Amino acid sequence: MQILFSLYHLLAATLERADRFLPVLARLLFAATLLFYFWSSGLTKLGDGVFGFMHPSAGAYAQIFPRAMEAVTYDTGQLGLFHWAVVTLGTWAEFLLPLLIVTGLACRVAALGMIGFIVVQSLTDLFGHGGLAHGALGAWFDKAPDALILDQRAFWVFVLLVLAIKGAGPLSVDRWLSSRGAGRYVSSAA
Figure 1 (cartoon, one colour):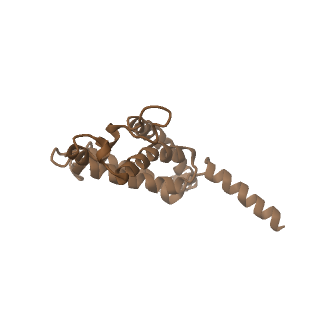
Figure 2 (tube, one colour):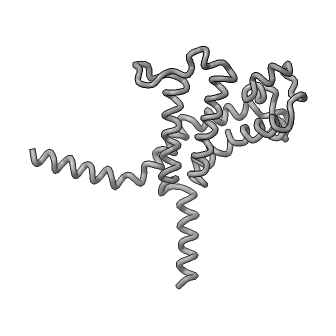
Figure 3 (cartoon, helix red, strand yellow):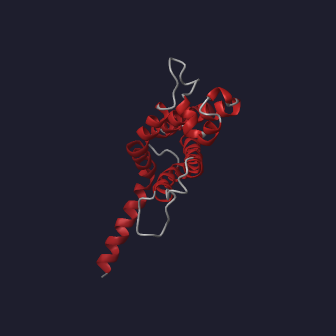
């Protein structure tokens, strides 16, 4: 029995040393499962032409402000600066925040931004698109692990919380920049 405890403690100590790679794994998992989801969603929001990133499509407004678009019979010209700013910044966020997370640049801030984005996305799905009435919310502690909002997005947020708390990890632009800055400070102080 003592041998089993010793093996267990050896395994636990090894896993604790591997803890520093958890953020890298979280970023890899984010890239594998969510990067192209968000980029594809962002592509549907771009307007026509080279400056489409400044003039979101009508579909972008309909996705983000479904009830407001319905109220103005899908005429984006009747919506104001606030609507344009939210849709434009939201579209940019779908491209930039995932890119920052995958590269590990400003990863903590990007992860917190993505958590906020997912909260707003979920609320829009539930209340703006009627998901609450159609059972999209789901429930925790039930036998079904596939509810769109509570189940799936809880895992998304958990991966992002790992990054917000632990940072980008050793294989990241953040770490590279940090090591360059620390090296400059040490050499100039000596």
